[in-house]
Image (cartoon, rainbow, N blue to C red; front, side, top):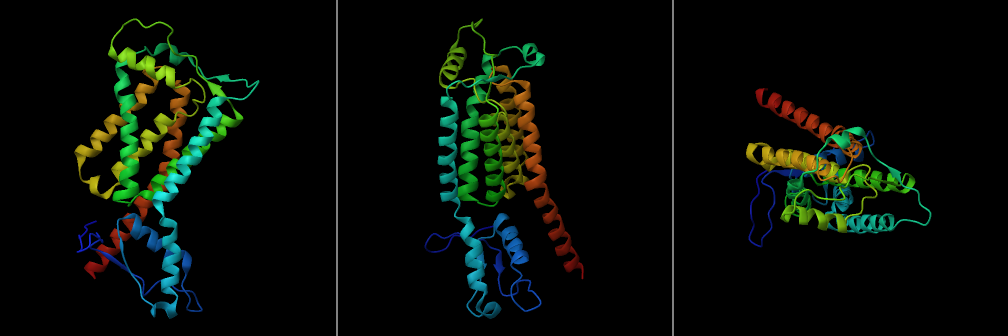
Length: 287
């Protein structure tokens, strides 16, 4: 999507969305389900210039558009849910009296060696996810709904599992074979991050949906360097959770499965819709 900067700093999209001819029902009123889907599709693909007026659709266009746009109070939504998640996570990390934790462990975990150098991509996760959240929420906003739904789904599943099935891992080494700055960083990580509530691995899940959001972003789809860099970093982060003994293979697999579920639910349908609109556009040009 292309944008233009106006006199007072506004940056509307070059392509606008007209609200004079929404789909209608038999009685002439707006078919709100179909019309909202059209608006959502336009907004998710970067359209920020919405054209409506008082007379459109018997004076119902403006109220309808206003109702749809209310759900795009993006920054507030992200902040409120972030606070909710942090409170839930802090409560779960404190533990409850008499709680019995289930150990997450497989033989494959014992076959994976500890490697302190993976602390670098592990810590890069915070910048990787944080910058993407800021970009999608505050700057481009094209894929906000898909990314937000993905974050909410994954963190809610994590909270639910941690609440009903308390779990932990016992993979961390007691003695380190080497002594270097990377090991010091691992020691710091172990002190600040408890080995409890590890199923599924949010480090893995959020890395994968972050990569999906980046590769789905219109501005990056044609930039192979950005997409490939994101994919490589995502893979390194996933591996780091196992080589640093932060997560079991089971945690990682569940995080990957959840990420692919989210792709089928939120990202794949959008790709199909894009193809449909492209085919319609091409056919209309031929006609």
